Image 1 (cartoon, rainbow, N blue to C red):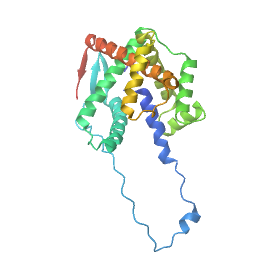
Image 2 (cartoon, helix red, strand yellow; image 1 turned 135 degrees about the vertical axis):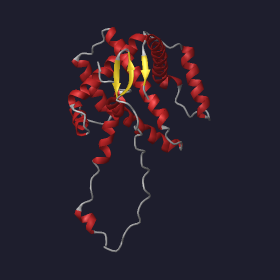
Image 3 (cartoon, helix red, strand yellow; image 1 turned 45 degrees about the vertical axis):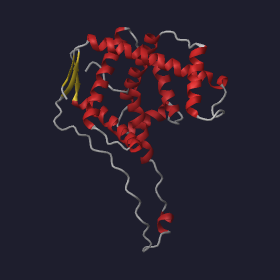
Image 4 (cartoon, helix red, strand yellow; image 1 turned 180 degrees about the vertical axis):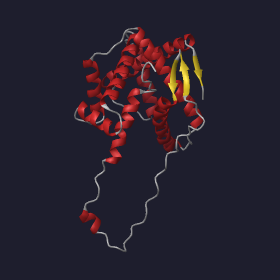
Length: 251
């Protein structure tokens, strides 16, 4: 394809980073192992829920096409496996079984949307500089409790994503963020909007006094309203892009 499509570039990177946690658990020392008597077998813990295997049987080599660009099964599989893992974790909290047919359709649609947005970013000449991509890597590393971008890239490489691929995905993510900011334009929340959001949160919170004072959370409220404004702008843009695009799904 013209670009490496990802339904959510940052989410994929975060998912790969998260995978390293379980693998780096410290094993028992020899002394700890020897301390257990031979016939003192501890009861087996309850088996952890097992994520379902990706159901990709019957899918064609080209999962979708958008304006002549193909989303291949290989590309789809990489994103779908990540989405399935996230959906499974959510299902453990909600108790609802993962519907893979619905998830496959949602994943394909998300990849098409990403391709449309990347094409629009390219059309508007958004090309993040090396410094901007480096800053994005440092921000992602800090968000995952890592000391530096180098540690982030090392972790990703251990999970099978080399530095060049990770940098390419970060570049795409940064270009999308620049597109979103451009589409949303300047935004300033009114006092009335801020008060309405605060009062709504207070009403849901129950007893009076559970929330910090309004002025203490003003910046957080402004950030939330700014994000909501940007989300609405991006959804509007996507509606226009879909209407003008030639999209075919082969699921």
